[in-house]
Image (cartoon, rainbow, N blue to C red; front, side):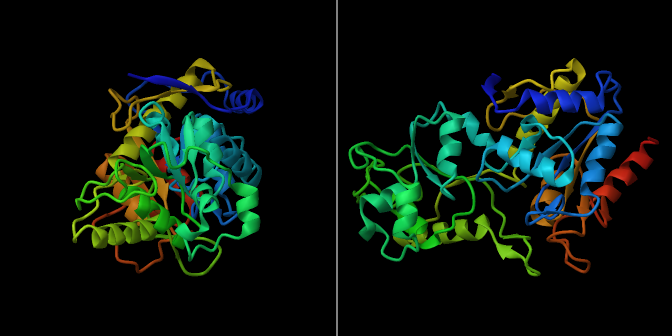
Amino acid sequence: MLSLRPLSASSVIGRTIAKSIGTRLLSTTSKEFAFAFDIDGVLLRGTEAIPKAGEALKLLNKNKIPFILLTNGGGILEADRVNFISQKLGVEISPLQIVQSHTPYKTLVDKYERILAVGTPSVKNVAKTYGFKDVVHPFDIIRYNKSITPFSGVTGQELEQFSSEVKDLTTKKFDAVLVFNDPHDWAGDLQVISDVLNTQGGMLNTLRKEQQWEPAVPIFFSNNDLLWANQYTLNRFGQGAFRYLVQTLYSKMNNGMPLRDFIIGKPTAITYNFAHNVLIDWRNKLLKGETDSTTQCLPPLGQKPESSPFDKVFMVGDNPASDIIGANKNGWESCLVRTGVYRDGDVLDQCTPTMIVDDSYTAVVDVLKKYNM
């Protein structure tokens, strides 16, 4: 069953998009196609725009072709992310056009009450805005008792600024651990997560007697990227590296048994199916002239589109292990760019992209030529 959830898309953005694209937007033939773009290493490198990335999106708008942004990044609200990207690229983008790593968590709001929201301090507000009723951040636990994480790098000033007192922290159980984005205090977060996963029934300050592969509460990771590209010349560790440490520590605590966890984000089918549904929803809003809408149809996590109007969906990405493998395994075309993680000569293990191009603009131009547009 589809659920409607509000997003903070501004009507100004919607009207601008509708004006630039027009109301007679798309044909309804079997030859429709669409695009999904990774962000880091494809549209932006760090905080700076990659040359011609904005022109790629403008070209799609000009040719009335729907697109979304599909990223394993996150940590802030979708509206805030697209506002920043819009300014950097000079292209208006709606909050309805982005799927961040943790966007699918919106479908879990009615399933879990108290969650441990792991990541940068901003994820606490993200989780609350999504609708989670009771959100605790690791900083809140450190504030309660600093001895819990003796090797944490969090300063007193950071605790004062970003944490809050949770009065029933030890008397109300946790229902799930949700990792929203790459944590910045790995020592502290590893300890807190390990404590919660090995509690008795999710109650802090307890330790269960039995050892097993099933944690006391479920844990979700929003992506499994081992590496990602920023302004530095070499790739950096990402959430996949953090997950590996959580798994290893859990196994050590549980007689060598592996941790049962849940992964979303690229390249999982869960995220690609979710993104496909979001892309269809955006295409329908374009057709109806409803780009100023503040609601979005969200399917349950893991539900494939019942039908798709697109003959092909092109994933433009820089990371073979997430963008390209994910696209290939889920029936999408894949465009691997040279502006991020991938370098010429890298071994493309288990994946062959549809095309390898210099940048996102070249990918769009090549596809348009193929479709004679």
